[in-house]
Image 1 (spheres, rainbow, N blue to C red):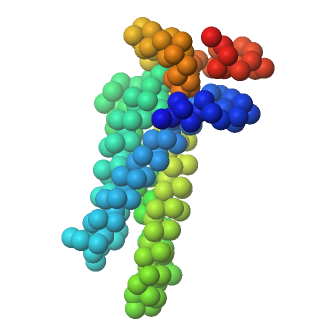
Image 2 (cartoon, rainbow, N blue to C red; image 1 turned 135 degrees about the vertical axis):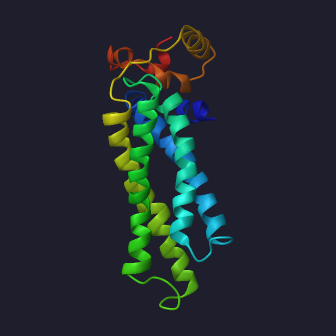
Image 3 (tube, rainbow, N blue to C red; image 1 turned 120 degrees about the vertical axis):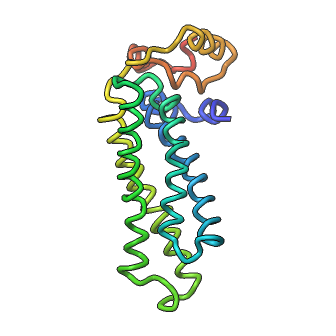
Length: 203
């Protein structure tokens, strides 16, 4: 699906996707975990944890964080590294723990500082305030923080985990078949070698 979308984008939009491939993949992972986070948060907040929205948010974010580690390590930052696995995982979850606090903070402000809760406001206003503060503002702030911290501390070195031979073969086959999306993993020096050339045409 992603390859079809990218291949149909205009060249001025498509080329930055290749140039900023890590950010694009990180954003895709963020979108995936956002859906997971939102679904769990809403289910918990309207069932077993109806009176504890902060606890609901922490639990949903923790589950999304586990999924985020797997997807980011194996896809977004697949060639980055520089730390032994257990140190890398520990740092990832420490930073994600800080991210949980960043995510939950706007919800706390909405609920307990601005008093956007019943009976001070209507039930509908409370639900909108909860969603905007937790799922929009909180998630956006946490995503910006994680993007910076993951690259700076968890996966500090580029090309620390080279692409294996089987993956290179898969990429070559994908190019020949016209599958554009895998090209998003192409090394930066390939993309920078001729800025005027269309990445798709480089076959």
